[in-house]
Length: 151
Image (cartoon, rainbow, N blue to C red; front, side, top):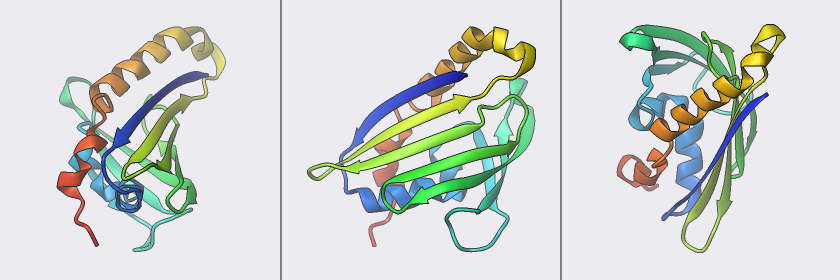
């Protein structure tokens, strides 16, 4: 299995950050690899919600994919399972923890490799780290305060 983790502290309360991250339609606002994302199930968010997404692929080509929210504990944890997408890590986990006036977020990216791909695990691990470095480091959630409107 290829695995990457990243931790960040956001200087704002947790509730709005959790809701913002769980709603995949916000991804293009803070994830540069996402062109567009659409909720294809219904208006509610939570376990079983499916999102159709357009991603930037090699040479800027568009790649389409679908993912599902597999787990959601309000204000604590969101687990996303990629259903269809070419060569993308299959599981993303966001864990939230309220601190004094801020939010700690732990991001985990996992990809279960099968068959001959298992021999490429070190290279895939490296590619996943490059994705995390480019997209999550400096974790663009730090700038969510510009995107999230307080309730």
